[in-house]
Every structure is written in structure tokens, then in C-alpha cells.
Length: 83
Image (cartoon, rainbow, N blue to C red; front, side, top):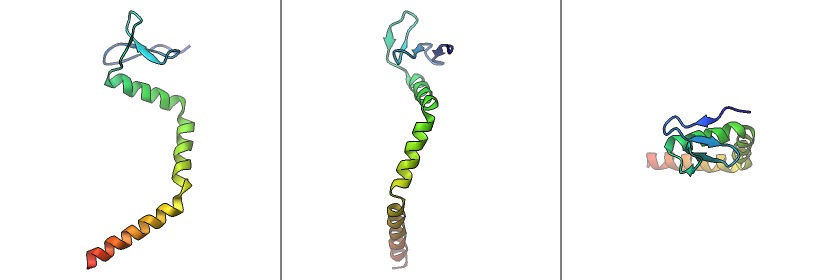
């Protein structure tokens, strides 16, 4: 069992079963800015391999099309600069 995750800003506690932050009384609350960053980092740590694989797949999906687009874009920029 992991130790409870407590927000460093407002002191509320993360409940992994519910997926919400709760006050000391157990009421779910709207997370503060630090809580949102904490929950995003928790999600990333738990799912980092899937997230990285999705990013890799989306990057390499249309790589040749992107390279051709930027090649043409840079060529147009150079031609406009010399005109």
C-alpha cells in the first residue's frame, strides 16, 4: 500500500480509488493548482510507457508529409527573403 498523497499547498489528500482529492473530513473538493499538477504527474508516472508510445506513434505517423511541408515552407521563406 502506498502512503497517502497529500497536496503540498492546501493539505487535501488524494484518494486513488475515487480519483479525487478529499478534505480531512472526507468531502471531495475541487483541486487547487498544485493538486492538478500533482494529479497530472501521478497519471504520467502510472502511465508513462503508454503516453510515450502514443507520442512516438503520432510523431512518426506522417513524418514524410511533415518533412515535405516544412521543406516547402522553408523554401518559400527563403524565396520571399531574397525577393
